[in-house]
Length: 488
Ligand code: ADP
Ligand code: GLC
Image 1 (cartoon, rainbow, N blue to C red):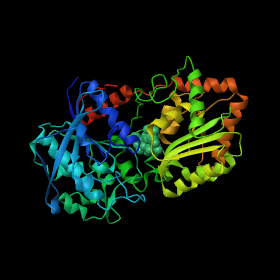
Image 2 (cartoon, rainbow, N blue to C red):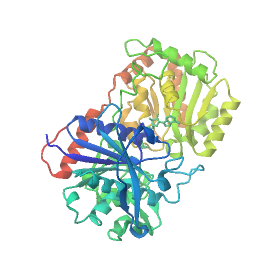
Image 3 (cartoon, rainbow, N blue to C red):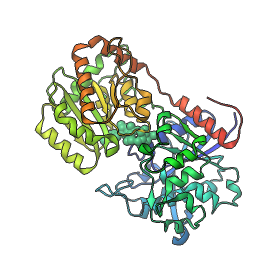
Image 4 (cartoon, protein in one colour):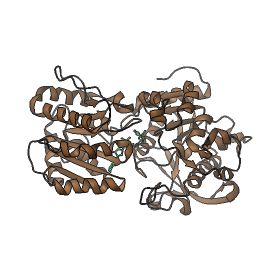
């Protein structure tokens, strides 16, 4: 197979910095590309939370031309992705990245200089690839944060030999966040060329330009690839996506089963597998203890989520009083919009025997919830892929999902007569439909035990591998480079 150089640039990467699934993907996909023989390097910012002491520092500082701002100089750190020899580089610039959160102030609004921060990351990654003498065949960019890279290649680096064979592949993980800024940021890019590819109601939309100027575009499920061509899911960019639809592909994310497998999970009190599910009960008891819930045999519904509009948290809030009228328990782990912190905190306070809640980010607890719950709830308004429902399938915790995007693609609805399917789906996002479906699952728990058991096992047998996804990405890279032949 050809030996391509791939530069992966993103705003987060597990286990170094993560706010959601984007970090998970960036932490794993490069390893699989490497396994298939590609040379891959990853670049992300060195956020304040990433401890420099575990990293190697490159000897010389890196100069980053920032248009009207002038040249800024940053440090670069290096290590490898865990259990691999894929190199990851961290752009270290205190003024931009030395902050508590990755993107937002504490009240949830984006940092005022997010345009400059991510123009800087993008430019620095290109400068770094030159410094390392790593000529990328493919630059794989992710979401709006790095969508200015094709602009830079077409302007500042237009005549640069180093990038003469470089193609750009953009992966859209979320269409709602587009990076819309005051158009003066074109001056920081140092060129107003291609402005109209980025222009959006008089402002600059990073993602729009990324979609227009990248060679290939992917998104993280086939369903979402169709949905973002419609106004309901594209947040104003449906026309742009349709214009590029012949170069758009849906590639479902895989699961990192080294991290998410109840048979080997280090974070749960007892491991279990499809052949012996007894450990799942131990996890359930531990979950009840963890949240101070009575140790009774009732179905537990779990949620792990960013508490934001995308995740249908407002719909859950509307339905929760009725949901709690059922003989069930409910646990929620998440953080996000402040109203949701107060709201669910109060629900927990008022219903100590039924509702447990932890506001914050806790990976270990996330594992326990996947293992100890009987059902996993995801009422997302839209979901490009969604990882938690795939994890919950593996943990024998059937997901209850709004049938959109990746949720619709990865979950098959329960047939209560035959026991086929892997979870519970509902169509039309509203509190009544969510309540009805949770009611259906509750009824199944008490009255359809053997078919529910089949459902649980069907889900545990599902396997969403990164091997498959990586092969499909390689097909897309090949298309971008004009190499003949399909790999997947
Ligand atoms: P998104 O990226 O839109 O948030 P995904 O389902 O793709 O949704 O990925 C979410 C990831 O973040 C999962 O790995 C999930 O376990 C994790 N996660 C989300 N919120 C929390 C939290 N509060 N604590 C621990 N893990 C969380
Ligand atoms: C985004 C999406 C989520 C997806 C993740 C990784 O954060 O909201 O659905 O799983 O990216 O691609």
